[in-house]
Picture (cartoon, rainbow, N blue to C red):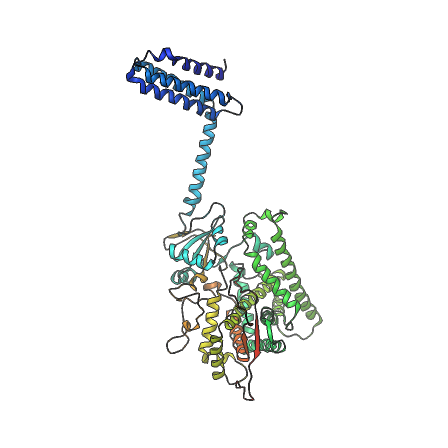
Length: 610
């Protein structure tokens, strides 16, 4: 006899026990007890139906209704009965319980699977939401799989989001980029402790599929660490010093580009789109230093190169790059690899530009022509000298040279160009600030040009440039660093490879140090006597061993380009237009494209404004 047949017979016997005749054998003192038993019978029948497989025990809705009516009739008889016995009610309850156990026994494997699934889910949630976060600094609760990426994607302002997290969790907190923890250090004391006092532990770079592929391995200087980074950085700094970065030699080259920029503005006065001429001006400074060449203002090729860098900046911060990092195989999936193909196309064009410059330099060296020194020639001669003397080549090779040039070209272009775009925009939006700068320049700089030697006499101009850097705050997230070895600081244990960064953007937006941080107010950098004031929390070039390689060059460019153009021109918003300071996120934060009216300031023969 099958289990199903046995169950059916037992259920039939149980029902027959409670017919009208059987009920009258019980006394009234157990009437309520039997009534509850009969009610359980209705419930258990329904329960067993719920666990039944498709089509089995399907007696139809009408049959169910009949059973329920039958039980209900029995309960009415119970209400009228005066002769129920307690033993009979107990017997009926035990019998119905046995029937229930037999009916659900066959579904026990299914129940165990459900319980196992729920148990696994509980363990998974406990690990994701509690266990894996226990050794990291506190931070916002991550979403499953996505981490805190939804918080970034759906926030109206990433700066406000960071400030809210700092207020809630303190100056050191953890956010999750998908499944990857990222520790943000955002108060000055902790930044100095982590990245200055323990600089050796917090200076490594994060290797991942995107950067390794773009750079053709561990190459360049920005995304590498260890002995190769130390050797290549030391060489680059030595060459930059030899080229006069921060001294009169480099100042002259910057002023050549300032004069070319000014000539372009005079020819194209009135309505000028500032993005392209700013990019050509700054780009030519770095091109001259790296390759000994320059582009004319209005150059389509230089405009295209800047456009490539701008597209790269936008692409690498797109959330889908996190997918490419976590699952590199997705770069080959047609429906997912659109942005990856765009990034590789940009890489190919940048490689072609760099290779052309390298080939031209090799041709010149092969011909024995007289050359004007630049970074590429210097690197080539260093490799040749080591080959001829049999010295250790170290990490010097052709591919490393190409990637080092790419890093210097991008770093020398993108950050300075972006800051100057913000600078001319803010000077246009705030004509009162522009006027004060011009008055100071007119009073302190008698000649036609502003020089680096004039800088100490121009506190307000320097304060404006500082406030432009603070307000623009162009690095939304600093370049990622990793911990070199296991270390414990401030009660937190960081394992080797943990991502930890100095989040300077939070510091420069902190209302405790910069009241009304969203207001453009250069006076915050001046003391009561009008002298330039040092603010320790102002760190636009980062800190520690990873501090900006070209800081002195960038400072010189910002000062000379901004001050000389404001001395010579008026910048105004077009009539009826309100220029926007909306922040466009990428590797750097850019302003929207804008145009301004440019007009030459009139001067007499003594260079005084008339």
